[in-house]
Image 1 (spheres, rainbow over the protein chains, first blue to last red):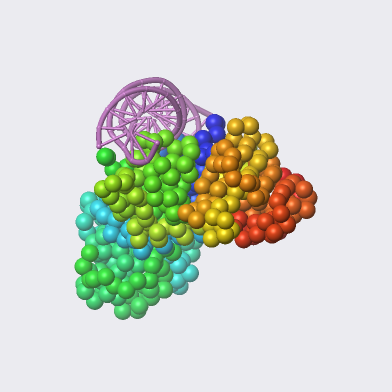
Image 2 (image 1 turned 60 degrees about the vertical axis):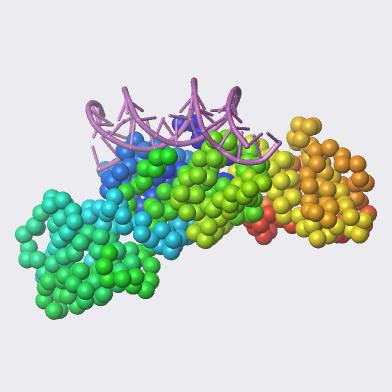
Length: 235
Length: 235
DNA sequence: CGGAATCCGGATGGATACTG
DNA sequence: CAGTATCCATCCGGATTCCG
């Protein structure tokens, strides 16, 4: 593997740029930071990366001492962040803060809306400590503004965790969430307060009064959501 | 100009990466942040960028609303940062901090040592309010470890500012600074305390006792220098 | 001379197919 | 599941040229 050409500068920003100012790298680090460890999970959080690119970046980052790889016997490699890699998070955080403040509209443009990716992110943040005694709970998400085959997702909470299903898993649906994909994404990002979307009828919650109240116990906004004032009820 | 392909993600880090995770972009923003406005000044702070690349990036950043261009009559365009561009500085700062903490050794590897670039940076930070009554002052820097034609620089302080000369400007040299290029760079970055370099004789100051004392009045470390404990007197 | 535009060869990234 | 291999499109670096 040939070393990427550097900038030839002693400046610390230049050195950091040799790692971070590279296509896909910040997003790979984001995935690792938020807990993905498997190659397949990384690909799921980065749907448009090519397999070759991901493999190449992981190798580069391992060599740079940013990413660690644990190769086990029975399972595939597990990726993680070294101390130096974990220390890059403030940079990612600053990037996220900048975009939330200065590029908000771009984030939810049509090409960036992706129900699979949104569900994958929601699943990761869903608090799975809230499974009722019965052992499982199902929340169904229904999105408007997306092709039919990608419009319905079931979140299956069990004792083991939360699973995304693309077909009805068969159990009773305890809660149904209906919204336009952009509305749901804007809520997720903190651009639109949940209660405002509910009262303006842009988001529909269906289920028992109790279940709807519990919704906020397991549904957490993106870790990068910003707590802003509402900028209007319509997207 | 075709729009660079994005990541197709609503995540704010992805949006920021579309701008920052691009070769040269963080360094161009660094130059603009530290006060360069002219195309030629930018090139001087980025010696290895190609002219075409710089022109392209400036145009992209202008379109993205990050960079402003003031096209005047008599002079060439003056580049600057928009509010959104200025707001990116915390990201650059976080990158710099990370490198100072986790990639210190790489920064002063041979390929990154560049006396022209170092002098250009020193000049930008030199406090030109300290010109003696006579109207000018000359400090000569002499570096070891670099080819002869790049080894001596004169900093000419006048009422107008500070100028870098590659040949003796003729005035009396009030101060002479001699050090290995790596030593000087490490001092500049805050990796090596100035007084430690002086007492270990790795840095030589020649001039009147008064002039040497005043040195610290106009010589400022890099804005990105970190205030660290010494990690040893030798590089 | 500053501020680019153009052209070209090599490096990098994306899409798809294939493998253990 | 976790990658390689391959091929093609785009990007980048460097030199040259252009323009005021």
